[in-house]
Every structure is written in C-alpha cells, then in structure tokens.
Image 1 (tube, rainbow over the protein chains, first blue to last red):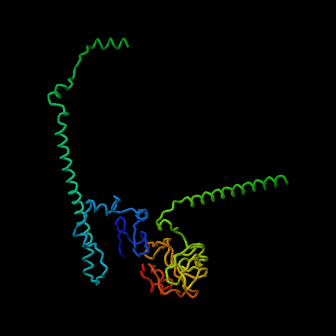
Image 2: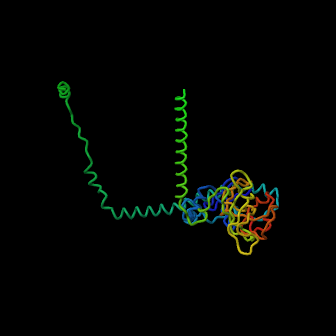
Image 3: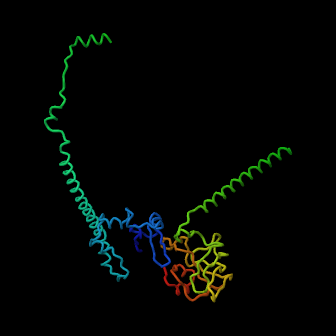
Length: 164
Length: 170
C-alpha cells in the first residue's frame, strides 16, 4: 500500500481515492479529487493557486527545509524485512509527526512575529505624523460634562400631577 | 357509445402528439446545446469521454500501416467498448505500402481510452486519447511495434504480446 501525493495540491492520496491521468508521453498525473483534476484541465499553475502546497512553500508560508521531511522521502528500493526495525518505525511515526507539527506551529509564530513588529512600527509612525489630531489633556478636562442636580419641591410635583 | 369512444381516442391521440412534441422539442434543445459547446484547442477538451461505440474514430498506435480507424462494432457489452476490449473497425486513413489499406475491416484492441476506468486498487485511470492496436481475428498482432503507454490491465485480457512490445506500461 503506497500513499501517493497529488500532483496539483501535494496532499496525500490514500488507496481507493483519486484519478490517474496518463499523458501520451507516459507521464502520470495523480489527483486527489476532482477539484485538482479540473484545475489541471483548466491549465492552472499550482504555484499561482493560493491554496496549494506549492504556493505556500514558494511564498514562505510553510516549512521547506526540515529534518522530518527526510523520513517521508519516496524510496523505490525495498528494504529487507526486519521485525525490530518495523516495530521501531511504527513507534517513531507518531513521534515524528508530533515533532513536525510543533515545528510547523513554531514556524508560523516566527513568521507572524515579523508582521507584528512591522505593524507596531507603522502605528508609531502614524502616531508621530498625526499627533496634533489628538485632543490635549487640559482641554479634555474642561470639556467634561458636570452633572447638574436640580431640587424640586414636593408641592410642585403634586401640582403638576393635578394639572395632568 | 360510438361518440364516447371517438372522444376517448381523440384525447389519447392528443396526449400522444403532445408527448411527441415535447420530446421533439427536448431533442432539438439538446442538439443545440451540444453544438454550442465551446471548442478548445486542447485535445483534452476535444476528447469526448465516453464509451467507444459505432463511428468513434481511434488512433492506431502500431506499425501495421493504418493511421485512423473508425469503430463499426464493439464486441463487448451493450453500451460500447472500454480499455482492453476488442472492437471491429474500418480503416479510414492509412500509410502507403502498409500491411492494411484504406477501407479494410480490421479487429483491434483498445489500449488507451479517454473514459475513466476503475482499477483493482480503487483508483481510476484515464488517458489522453482513444487508441487501438490492430490484431487479426485470432487475436495475433498485425504490427511489430506498439507506441506510447499501455495499461497493465491488458495482462488480465491475455494480450501479453502487446505488453511485451509496449514502450511504457502504466
């Protein structure tokens, strides 16, 4: 059982899924779903379509270099079966996946840090430029509304009620 | 009584005619739709992805001398032939001094089909065009070479010679 990668979006194709398109030069294109197949038929470039893995890697959104990717490399030469090695591999798979996810999260936070610092710089610059638009402290104090308490006698209120 | 029957018949006739009229209108609409479909320069778009049936033109991918064959009979199923099936065809275009000439009625094995075909592993395979390899009525190859990719499903259909001569097996 081999898990293939979609030619368009680079997602994993599990057995029983997807379409294989064979071109006349014998190049095989595997697609995970009809969405990818239709995009291929429309001659769309996966590097320019924003939701694909190719675009995300090209624009620095996803990790491109990491030691965990080495484990997922395609190996065409079959290994001699060894029970111990198989057991170790099966134990290691979830661990490697966990490490990769953690590194991916870290990569995203690092990527977002730059944006945050740039935003802070922009805010500071804007504040410097438009400082005069902010109201001054003393004017703010003077313009505060003071509550006025009006005392009304009991008789006046009774007269008003009678009139009504 | 006679008048009653006459009225019944006339109403039946009207309903039949009405139904026929509707069908006719539907048929006209469908034909218009098929004609007005946009034609792309890409062969992927031009290829109609359906069964290989009567009047389907197929590319010949061996060196028997034929270039283009038109299917005149599918030897499998009601609807038509698919990948790996045998058909009878008429040679429409041929090279000079080939083993077959224009107008010959020949047998052929479909080695590439634009229609999707399910595989044992659950995936589907689909080719760029419809292509055949010419064989005689005993199933022996006329040509000596097979060009382009062919699917490994031909092994199940006992066309081992085609697989042996093929450039690529997918």
